[in-house]
Image: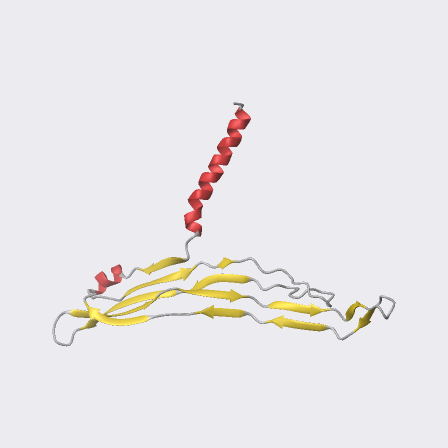
Length: 169
């Protein structure tokens, strides 16, 4: 086997290994963000809330191309809507709550996980000030008023949260 062939195969295997190693990282939907308060707890000699969160990773999609419609010179959706799938940030909070009848601590907790978010950016529709060629007018197009329209953006999500009380932190 020639050295150039071996070098090419080594480069291909290196690229495949790098792509396989990066694939799990690309599949992450949200990045956890812990808020470290241990040092503050030790310096103040008291229990503080545990705080954490999640930041979603946006993933752009592929837009739908223009649609050709009979009778129009310019296709629909000249500027297509760009879909982006991401999520709303999540939060987790657990705070000590002094127990009224004893020395034990109870806690109050709020858990709002990252929720899916689907968006479509705004788009644009245009139509030329000319009609399609007419048979009665020697094959020449007629005139009409130009048309322009903005396709409204879309935002869809279902956020959830859970608030609870319980023993211990």
